[in-house]
Image (cartoon, rainbow over all chains, first blue to last red; front, side, top):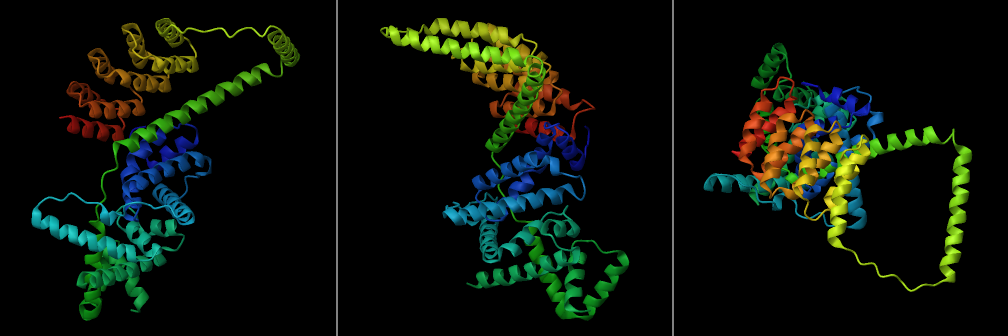
Length: 183
Length: 264
């Protein structure tokens, strides 16, 4: 069990050793939480969505083949869960609560804090103005360990297309950020 | 180089995925085209901004909800397995006996219903002796915890949760279950039940002493979470001892190190 890869752990979960899902949860909970949070969900909803990812992993464990990257498989699931959640919210007009820009971050140093808070506020506003697809591709590109091949796998496109999408979303974000900064 | 080629190569360059040769070719190209150089710099700045994007820490409640859901799923899985085993064993062999049993039960119910209608007796007042019920329940817990079936031992622990104030014998039995039970779910349930009594010193001491006895990662993580919540300084030494174990999972190792830091 020592140093088992994610793939090996998930294959163990598939074969009935559900205990191992606890280890996968410990490894990925923060990243998934950050993914949902940076996509604009409030902390409490982000936590619920992280739970849903693992519930879905448990439910569909038999369909896991071990092919491709585990992280890509997990994020694909997370992406679908986020999509389903927003569909439901739109349908029932549920108020999703506080958006990240309204959540106060704790940063040290007064002037640093003000600068960083201002930048974070504009960045979150700019991100919120982007299309859902652009925002999603940018949040995924934040994770160093995700290769473009895996981002392509998650989004269902080729590696080259993933690079182009990240590039264009970055340019759009920069443009929106500058616009908001001037205002 | 056309626009799309530049878009692809710029991303490869920024993510450090280029070979040395391609990197130097790209840098030469950038050097000759100032507009692309500016665009690359802007992309890099924006990418840095995205990478520095913060997210708060998820709350401890998320862990509690996840691990209790996982433990419930494990219980359900066990229960399903033992139920289907029992049915498979009983059903084909004793089909006539089952039918006969059902007929007798229906007859009994019908007779009972008729008799009950005939003498519509006055309702009997049942006076519940709380103390007596509690002591019966404690005995039930002790008996169930000694059963060979893990399901029955789990039932024992869940009965223990219903006791308002468990006495020393029940606490000792729960601690013994936590240390010696062969089943991980029963151990987990015992921890959950003992958390009702963490204000009692002997329970806290018992929980700390059980740390070196746990080999399952889930139990190790659950105990670590509990000790952080309790801020139990006495648990630091046993966790350090546990960290010396060579077989310890790396995730558990990280979790224990974090827990030790939070406790200190």
